[in-house]
Length: 169
Image (tube, rainbow, N blue to C red):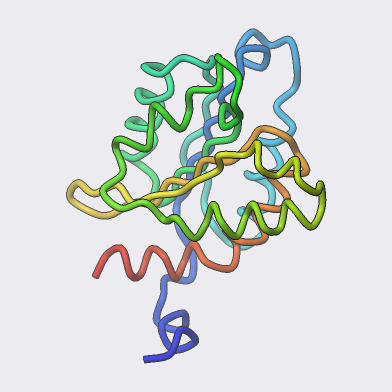
């Protein structure tokens, strides 16, 4: 079956959660533009936002928020904490929980980022994976910058439905 045929049989909408990982936003010292952007863009596609949280760059708080989100959502998107500073721990918190890593998501994101920002794209550790319990769920870990989120959402809006279909087979 071709990827077009697979996409045609994929769900047409999903429930999603957004978790912003940011010390400053969690202290309400800056507005969460990236999180709000994700919510608005996915709602325009007909998807339902069922969870939203802002947490500091702390592993246990990130994991707790994702677990809460997975109880309600098919797709969880985190924004922030994917860089290389000492406080960037989203990847370390979540990637050990993946049953399957979607390596291609990070690769394509960095390729698209390279086209926009050049070699600085190597600083991003954006990734995605499948987490399984009773039902498979998709988790995307995006950088915190609004431009990076816009780039990642181009991919997510095209492929999340398709990913969900395969993850649940």
